[in-house]
Image (cartoon, rainbow, N blue to C red; front, side):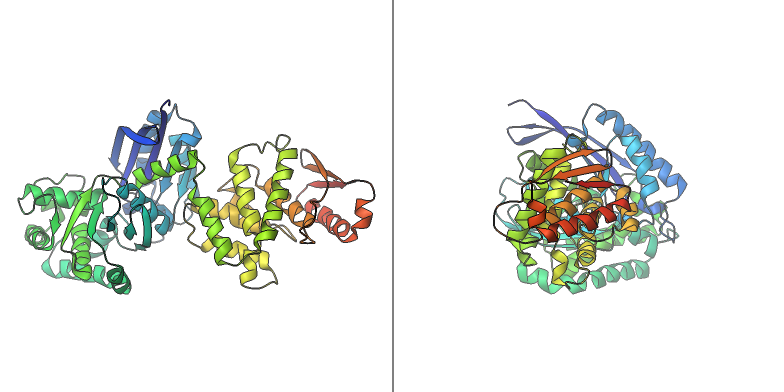
Length: 495
């Protein structure tokens, strides 16, 4: 089997990472790693706007990454933004520049999706994947805590504390005192308190840390001869006392600590101590693998059509008690439409097929709230839920399609979704709407006989002779649809 090159880019709140690998017989062989300390999280002002200097520094880093990725196609690269871009006010301007710099789309992922990918990356880095483990990742703006069995996460949580945010809040002028450190640790424990009982009840056999903060702590403890490749609370307390004795961030000088990591190290150590105390952790191993390796394994799964997003949608259909038979009928119809007009509307890519399939499966999800305006309820649910495998932009696209599948087009929502997504978003919505109309009878009988042809903003649907006369409700729905489509400058011809 020939090797396929894939790459993952992690736009973290503290560091940006690039990892390139070859896939041979479904195994990863890492061939390149790049890392730059960008401190994106430190560039947010009090209104959550990214300052120009930080934005410029981030784009310059991505331009360097882009040189390494220039030969790879879009499907071979996954680039994701985490806490800072999740919380930033209107990140689209930065994302536009960033995409141009790196040459590939950048997706913003939720905290829970970040946790899933971290667990996936870490669990693949162990020879014995079958034990129950707790994985902890301290980033610049968030901390992810996951418990799982083997490769499957059981519980995932993303906490609003990271080494950058904790340092900025409790050591804003750089001064480090015993009182400030105590307050920072206490703040971390307060953040953890709602989750302690559930985490302890689940239990674990092994605790693993990943990413920069925990790797830096482990390196320093080994260099100071306070531990042997593992982190312990006793060693952490000695490290804390050493940091407090330094008195100021600029005076922290520890063996094994890089100059780039030092400015946010105090806040990171406070979080680690809070975790050990709140969860009664005895010792922690540290993994070299994290979110970016998780992204790579996610891509390997998609190559074999083992896409977590498909499993998520199937689980939602079951959990929300969606009429599965009707969802399948609508799905079959949208795919028939796509086969007929996919070439004419340039919708032959897998992405178009995936979004139409997911939207058809979930288009009635809003009925779990109310039948009235259920399309709006459905769009809201999908926009705001944690959907494993989906980025924020992908959820916005899917939410738009679900909301737009009936009645008037949600123009304002289209303006937002179009910034995230597929180049032919309106065409996807038109196809879904048509499929819903053609299945209005909710009958398990023979499929509706029709033929579609399409041109630029024109769709023509043809039925056998007398079929429309025998189905007056469908005819009425199609005539109403002509009016709805005219509002977005599309023409529907019926014959």
